[in-house]
Amino acid sequence: MMNLIALSSRSRRLFTSGRSIQPLIPKDAAFVRKTITPSNLSPASLAFVGDAVYDLAVRERSIFPPIKWQSVPKKQRTINVSHLCRAETQDEILNRIMTSFHLTEEEMEYVNRGKNLAGKPPRNLKDKSLYRSATALEVLVGYLHFKDQKRLDMLFDFVFLQFKHMDFRLLQSRTKKT
Image 1 (cartoon, rainbow, N blue to C red):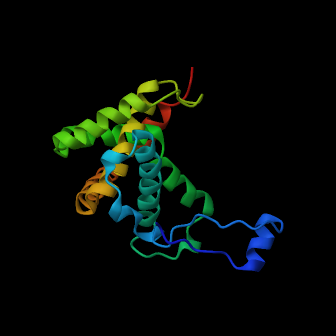
Image 2 (image 1 turned 120 degrees about the horizontal axis):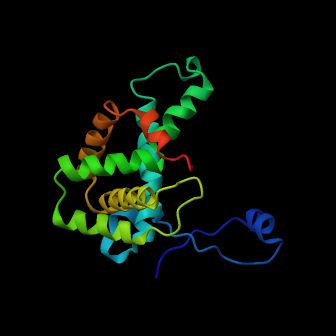
Image 3 (image 1 turned 45 degrees about the horizontal axis):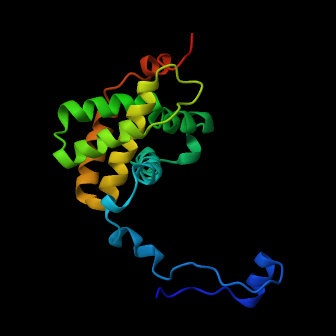
């Protein structure tokens, strides 16, 4: 049986309008990553986690080397991060990973699962393959997040090296519906 954290009586009253319920928050929730194997998760779950991990990695890299964040115009900060997290950029990155990063057979299997998972793309994307590739990249990142952190770090090192050689204006033009 999993140990659970109980809310104080005051917190319970605030969140439950006086009803007495115990929340199901595991005490060891911080160590979930160490106990989960990617094979037990659906590709959708891996994509969900992979999206968050990818976004966080981009945000972390955007403030390194340390700069005075306030000296960068706010619009410029969000543009840089949002360009790197767009489906077009993720598609281009996945293409470069497939050609130059040497994925293992198991990693390729998860990339293919991610491509097959992608559902209906957002309306602003004219090309469904962009959305499929972005989802595949997110599944790969989610898989590596749970399976092998060192390999994930190697992947991110490769990805951020590729960002230096990309022309984001060309990528942005691929999204416009005609």
